[in-house]
Length: 181
Image 1 (spheres, rainbow, N blue to C red):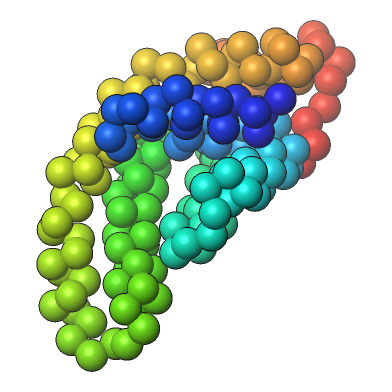
Image 2 (image 1 turned 90 degrees about the vertical axis):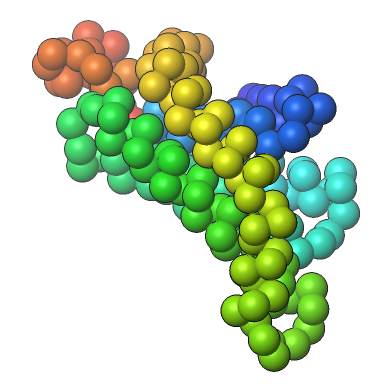
């Protein structure tokens, strides 16, 4: 189900350039589902590759989306709930995606590394409007939708939602469920 919502969410928003929900969903699935969310992210990346074919973007996807999920698994384990922190992490990861995917495209698509820095700068600046749109989207979407979607996923999957409650153990004890971490 999680992989299907990633594929469907990406498809639905594909008409709007670089406005995406994949970062939010990868973060939610990592935060709520743990390792199961990471598996769903890999299924998503494989499905995208089967739909759209192989290109340099596949390398970026296999690195970036699992990294987003893993970052939020770690945040769920080692930090107290904090919308500002989670939004900041999402924004940094979004910026990193633009830089990393540009590095991969310039490095692999051209096949040579002569004048790499200059070519990277030109390539990155050419796509800066798209990267800004992607970053602003996550800056707005994360603080507003992360908590409600996380709670909904926890409810649907019958997993405890341990974030944003006064006593983190209270919710776990009341559901009797455990997280697969």
